[in-house]
Length: 125
Image (cartoon, rainbow, N blue to C red):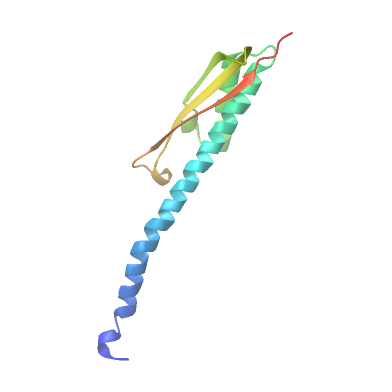
C-alpha cells in the first residue's frame, strides 16, 4: 500500500457516517413520533369509551386518559386533555382530545405538535 492511500479509509468512514447518522436519527425521530401519536390516540379513545358509559362524565374520561398516558409514555403528554359533549349521527357522544408536543428524539429541540381525539357514543338508559 502506498503512503498516500493509508489515511483514505478514515476519510471514507467519516464521509459515510456524515450521510448515515442523520438518516438513522431521522428514522428514530419518525418512529418516536408515530409511537407517541398511536399511544395518544389509543388513550383518547379509551377515555372517551369510559366517559360514554352510563354513570360516568367527561371528567372521568379525562382522568382515564391521563392515567393511560402516564403508564404508557410520560406524564408530560397527559397535561392537555379535554373532554366535551358532541353528537355522532344525531346520537349523543363524548369527544376526548389530547394535545401534546413531542421533542426531537425526546431530548429537546424543535418539537412536533400532535392533536388526537377519540369519541364514543354515550350510553342511555
